[in-house]
Length: 220
Image 1 (tube, rainbow, N blue to C red):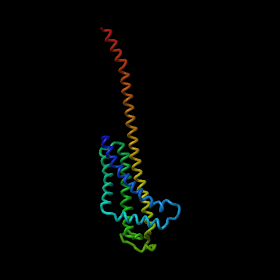
Image 2: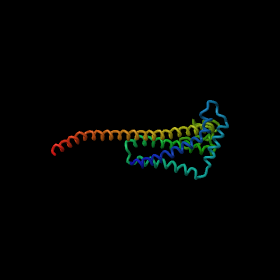
Image 3: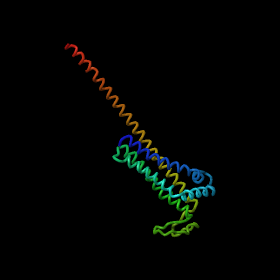
Image 4: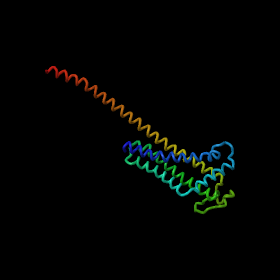
């Protein structure tokens, strides 16, 4: 792949990744009192996070559509970079794509599902293998060995999912930066070797050219 198109594909990857990190950073003030403080979490902290998540889930349909378009933009960037891939693309972009897909899985399975639970308020639901829903777990009752988690634990799981997703996206940025650095060092090494080869060729031509001129003068 040409360097210009590869740079554009990298741009398509970095922009969505940075965008999602910004969204997660906006959630950090709500997650911090729940996950990252040694003191017991106050009820107000859970209420603040819950209200914020309710606002997010109740946003107009345009908002999730934009979010999904940004996700697809990142996948499109990986598709461009992995078309006729080099060894560098297979290593760095392949690992980046794996992390990106892990982030999508965390988003779909944990965050989207968590937002639906917060909106419905059914924190104590527990699903059996057969698909039957147990509502009695709200009271902390263990029914047939299946126990649902309460409101606070559900919100903690959502906060932890935000942290996991942020770490995954940071991993994507680190891999892309590592690829840029590796390719930059490779280009510098190729340029150095080409320059040394050209200098050796000039040195080899020097004496031969001098001898040819001397022989030409002797003939005249």
